[in-house]
Length: 300
Length: 193
Image (tube, rainbow over all chains, first blue to last red; front, side, top):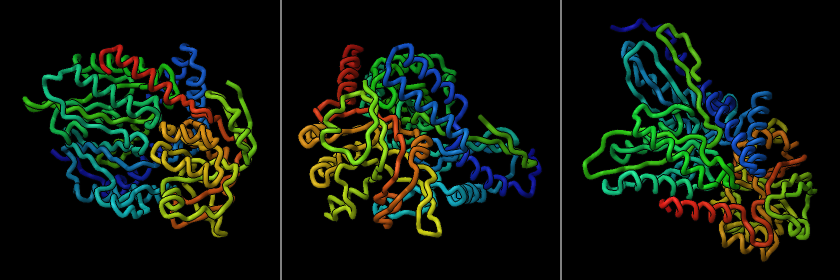
């Protein structure tokens, strides 16, 4: 069964790709706002004066960005589009890819957004926030008659704090905890804590990294992995990470992480891969759902 | 934990007086620099085209729009991670007289030692809070080395720029080192260190 597509569907995908890039940078997601307020309250309760001042400044910044329609942070990141396409839509996926890229370029030109994309060796700028392999596009195909697009402009302070370790099975859960804590410790102030810690377990090395990114950028704060064993690990790791006292901006305090999110895949009998990806406090993300008639619904 | 407003340019005595966790606000001028700016100064040996004596510098690469009259309009000015640029700060103090560095993430022990010797401080801004930062910058007054865009040398006029937390003082103390040491002890106690 396939849905009849409106003639303008590709234009709409392009517009949504453009709009989401700008919205992700100017409008902090609802779940993140709640996380930031909880962090401020935790610092007040712990009588951590510097940390409390940091969190008050963060909240004031979010308020000012709302009021004046400004960007929350100057890092316009590298654009990541996570796209779930319903199997009832007969879309030309090559065209979808093209339009996502054009959307990112239009956002960069129109706003204008600072462009960050450079060649890895010559460091030559493209000035479009796109280029070879950019934007990052992650497609998934699901049952349904809509296309869901989520966008994360991943900032560099947090992305530079990315880690992968191929642990051995005998290191078990303790090995995973030790590695994750070491990652948080090594990251210190750099990823702009309080962070969202994304963890990918299992799969091959690339799958683990991909799952860590899904966990850091696209899972909502306050949600838990449906697998109770994994959910328990999320709770325990959050508790342990916050006991380190690294705190907001690495200046000490009760909240180093607002959330620990774990995603997993089956792996090999002789492997125990763990990937960690940090997301900074702004938790930048925006999403929309487009149906076959071209109606666009905002996703929070 | 005093609250102090400083007017630029700063003297060595101004920064020697600051203690860890003091809150500082800056009035006057701040110079924006980043990786490429400092690679030009130190690795290519090209002196900055303006006097930085007593300057406050900021680790940034602003988002701007160039106007027809050649001036730059601010769009979003925020702060990047300083640790990457750790090796440059002692040279900025010693050769060019920069007295305070504003950034996020801090510097490493070798630079902290040099800051004590040469008289420099590190002021932590709240990373990611660029909307406030942009509003506290009144104007982009001058830009040098536009070929490095956006990593040029920028001169900003600022008003009540802050809050900035004294995170590394001019006496060898660092909040980051203290926090890290404490965290390492906690991890050891958890049996996970």
